[in-house]
Image (cartoon, rainbow, N blue to C red; front, side, top):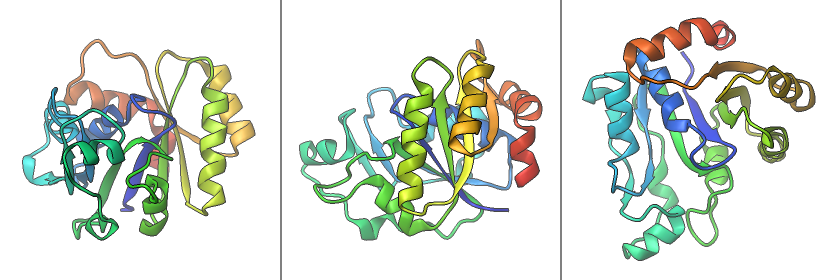
Length: 208
């Protein structure tokens, strides 16, 4: 099975929810969030473990954890640290789901963007995007940035209230498949996430 990256068109887009869905539905996979910014509400690794109900041994320890909920380069400065690209090598565990921080062009240092690290990993990327107004522009810009760096794109996952028109536009203008959709969920737990994967991610399951 193929390891892959999860990134998004913006921060707060639903990358951690998507990671939880995959971890609940794909028991062969391990999860890694290499850079965590903000710990007041816990870490994304803790959220994924709780929501997916996966065992802790499937969640790999972060390379960096910063206290402030800011861009990693700014959060690192506050904590008196500096992110080193050499510390962001992929773990040996496979297959692997790697969740980025924020969007594609989030700065890790004064000279290093997260998308540069994605390029070095040479893994396909799943792009999380909103279903709401504005998502077409944001998604197409993100796809353009990925293609400019020759990062393989697995496809997009649309998160939010159903919007078939935006999904069709992303596929048509972006030239990528919609791998799945996640509607608004009143309850987020492993059985619910597995049901969404079963019913809403048939395209993704076809490429595994």
